[in-house]
Length: 220
Image (tube, rainbow, N blue to C red):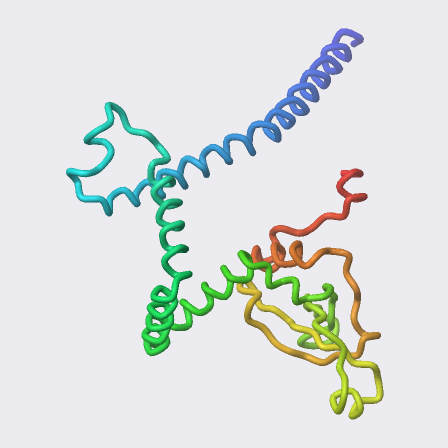
């Protein structure tokens, strides 16, 4: 009986040992492998840019072996060239002409505008226009939405109400550059500790990337 208990105890310790260490190894290696695979796929996809070069001028005709990442170098050079071009007088005029043409094309104009606004928000940091992040009950009671405080209601907008009102912007997902302007009573908002940048990640990921407080992260 004692031998059987000893074997069961040994088996339990072995099982716990395997479980703990396999899980630890998985948590350590999985992000590394996933990052490597994502980078490999991304670089491979970007390298397809080389296909725009005529076949006889492609790098593989002059190099003894393929070099991954040449597409990325070409992309960076293309971005630099494009940036220099659109910043001069002629480039700005051509961009305005291009956007006028795009505006006349149904569906395409909506996609173009949404993507442009999203990239502009991320690249230029237009999120600085938002002062803080709050929760409001919207679109109905007991359903909450993230909102950005943009200012305090003044003038006639404030005089016509009985309570202190604030201006908020309620963004949509996954494109937070589109949304709704609302005026809400300040005492009905719930202030949040997360930064505007963290809330943008939350919105664009549809709730997948949820900010964690420092204290909670340390306890975890």
